[in-house]
Amino acid sequence: MAEYNDGVLIGDWYEKIQQKQEVLNTYIRRKEKNLLLTQKTNAVKKNLLREVPLHVQPDGILRYGDTVQIVNPELKVALSNVIQFQDVFNIQNLAAGCVLSGSFDHTPCVRNVFRLVSMVPSDNEPKPLRFGDDFLLETLHDGSVPLYVQSEIPNMNFDTGITNHRKVKLTATRNTYCRWSILAYKKTEREDLLNCVVQANVPVRINHSASNQQLAVEPRLYDTLFDAMEHEITVHTYMDIHRFEKIENAWILFTPPPPRVKPEDSTLQHTDDQLSNE
Image 1: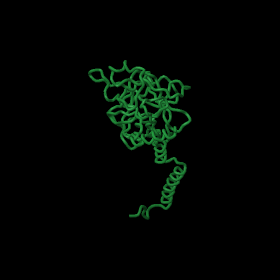
Image 2 (image 1 turned 120 degrees about the vertical axis):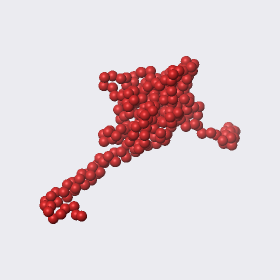
Image 3 (image 1 turned 90 degrees about the horizontal axis):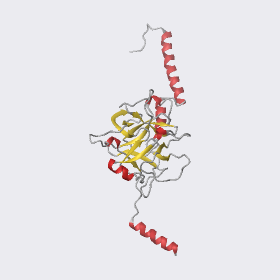
Image 4 (image 1 turned 180 degrees about the vertical axis):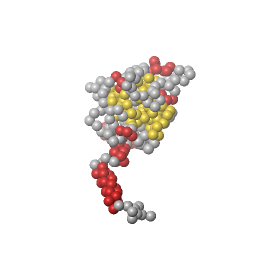
C-alpha cells in the first residue's frame, strides 16, 4: 500500500521528502566532521586500547618509573580507566575526572597500565619502591598534561559511587589525595616489612595515604563503553569478623617475568665471553 493516497495534498508530500532529505544531510555533515556517536566511541577505544609494554625487572624488584598492571588476583580484574557514556561526546581520551573500574580484560594497554612515580618531581632515578613509601600512579595516555590516580576526602559536594564509597578518579594535579603506599598482605608482617623493597607479582594491599583506607574492588557490576560489565573501584577497607582485610582489597603489581635462559644458551654465552677475553 502506498504511503500517500490521492487525497493527500501534493505540498504535504514534498514537505515530507524535504524533511527526510534534511535528516540525511545532517547525518552526512556530522559524519564528515566525525561527530557521530559511533565515530567518537571508536576514537575512545582506539586511544584507550592501544597496547603499551610493561617493564621487566630481572630481579623482580619494583622501581620508580616502572610500568605495571594493578590486578586483583582473587577477583581477576585489572585496575582500568573508563570514559563514561555521558562524556563520550566531549572527550575521546583520558582527562581529569575520568573514573576507574575493574576490568576482566588484562591485555596491557593505555587504560590499564600505570607508571610508578616518586613524590619528588625532580627525582627521576629508578630507586626501588619500598613498603610504606608514598608514591603516585600516572597514566600512559597521549596527552600534554600528566594524569594521576586520586581519591578525594568526602565533603558537601562529594560524588560517591554506586556503593556510597569514595570514587577513584584521575586528576591533573599532584596533591595529597594522589598519595598511595604499599602494605604487606598480612597485618602480622607489616611492621617487619616496613622499608623493605616491594617485589612484583606478590599479593599486597594498596593504601590511600590521605584517608588510610585501601583500594577496593566493589562486588557490584555496571555496564561500560567497552561492551563488558566491570566492577566499580573505590577506596574502602573491607574487614572480616577477625578484623583482617578481605579479598576485595587484595592486589598485585604485575610485570612480566624475565625470560628464562636455556642451559645451552648460557653455555654458549660463557664460551663467547671466554673467546672475547682471549
